[in-house]
Structure formats: structure tokens, C-alpha cells
Image 1: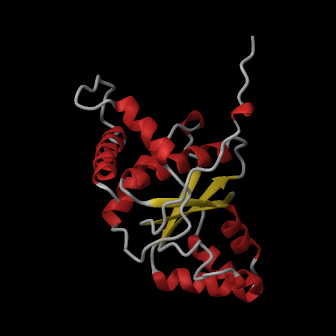
Image 2: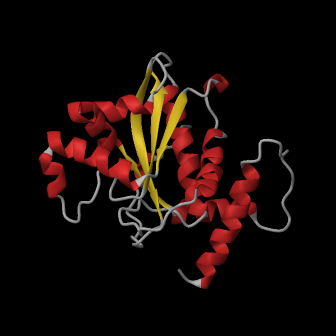
Length: 213
């Protein structure tokens, strides 16, 4: 990571942590160009699928997750629940359980665990009785992802990992250990870790945006 990126990430981290302070009131920011920092943060983010073994501290994870739960959500129902797994042993046990029922998963090149080999995973569940809950979970996840990136921590949204856990009889004990509340169901996971790759941006479909006159 070059010096410019370090400076950028430092500015972004300051901005994100300030924004996640629930007691902070909106005010003009003169020390940094906040709009530029946020835009650069969003445009530089990439899905990371190769991670270093470095551990993310619990303090850092709590700061990231605090930003997550300050995302907008319908009627302020906060219709999501979060479980964080950062134990290598537990990640390995869940992986072994899933692979037992679906051995082909382990045939993937460089396979170590079902969370794209990340050292930490955030599991997000939604309230099945609220029709906007999945949207709330998406907003929550975006805040988590951007807050993580502001600290130099990569991420990857994982729908398949959640499906594997839900569909695997051998993984049910671990799903039960997550102890989600009644009517809550695992929706997706977010892998977190310090990047061990620098992928290029993939093309985006600008034609998907249309203005109505």
C-alpha cells in the first residue's frame, strides 16, 4: 500500500468513525473535503477474495459494526441480527460441516474455508415478518463494508456461504449456535480481512441508469 493510499485510508477512517457517532450533529467540515473522501472510498472499494492471516482486533470490529447499525432502516425497526465469527477453530468447524454434505466445495482452487478463506465473517439475519427487512440488511452491510474499507480491511458479500449453512444438515448445530431470534433467518455473510490482493475494478453497466422526463 503506497503512501497516498495510507493517507486516503486515514482520512476515510476519520470520516467514517465521526459519521458513526450517534451523538454527532451535522456540521460543515472544513479540514477535509468530505464529499471527495466518501466518493473515493466508495469508488475504490473492491470485493476481496484473498486475505492475509492478520487478525482484526475486536475493538476494530466493534467500530466497524457500530457504523453498520447506524445505517438507515425502515421505521427504525432495525430488523436484522448480527453474529460475528472470528475464531479460526469455529470457522474451520463450520467449513468441515458444510463440506461433509457438499464435498465439491472443497475442490475449489486454494480452498481453506467457505468464507473465501477470510479470517473473520459477519453473519446477517433478517426478520422474515417484515417485508423490507432484506433491504435494511443490505444497507447495514454497505455501511459495514465501507467502514471496513476505510480501515484498510477488505470484504466480500457471500450469499452462497449462507445458503450452504442453511442447506447443510451437518451445519445445523452451528446455525443453532447463532441463536437468531424467532422469525429471523440467515440472509448473507460478509467476509472481512486484510487484503492480500489488489483487484482491478470490473465494468459497471451505466445503461442501467435512466432519467424520466
